[in-house]
Image (tube, rainbow, N blue to C red; front, side, top):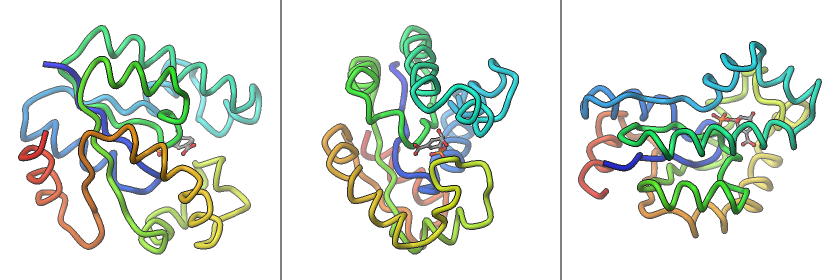
Length: 166
Ligand code: S3P
C-alpha cells in the first residue's frame, strides 16, 4: 500500500490521529517533525533560527522523497510541508492525502501553550492563525483526497471516518 499522508494546519490533530491510525491499522507512523529533529539532532525552532525556514523546507522535501520510496506508513506531515509544489507532488504520487480541519479557535486552544512552532511564535492569537489558515486553505483543499473535520470529535471517530473514506 502507499502512504497515508495527514496534512493540515498546526494543531489540526495530525500527530494524535496518526498514532491512532497506526495503532488500529497496524502500520508504522512517521512524525515528520520528530524525524527531522532526530536526524538533525536539534529542535525545529533551532533549525529555523540557525539555518532559516527554506533549509527546513529542504529537509522536509528530502524526507518525503525517502518516505515515498518506503510506503505503507501513516505520515503526520509538518503543517507547511504541502505548500511546496514538489512536496505535494511527491505525496500525490505515493499515497492518499487526508486533510484534517479545525476552526481557528480550536487550533488556538490546542497550540496556545506551545513554544515549539516558530511560525506562530510572537503571533499566538486567533486572528493571526485565522489569517494564515486562509492563505493556506486553497492549497490544503486542492491537494487533499479526503477532508475530515476534527472539531469536537473523538480521535477514534476521526480515525474511523478516515478509514472509511480512503
Ligand atoms: C509548520 C508546522 C509544524 C512544523 C514547523 C512549521 C508550518 O508542524 O513543521 O513548525 O509551517 O505549518 P506541525 O503542523 O506538526 O505543528
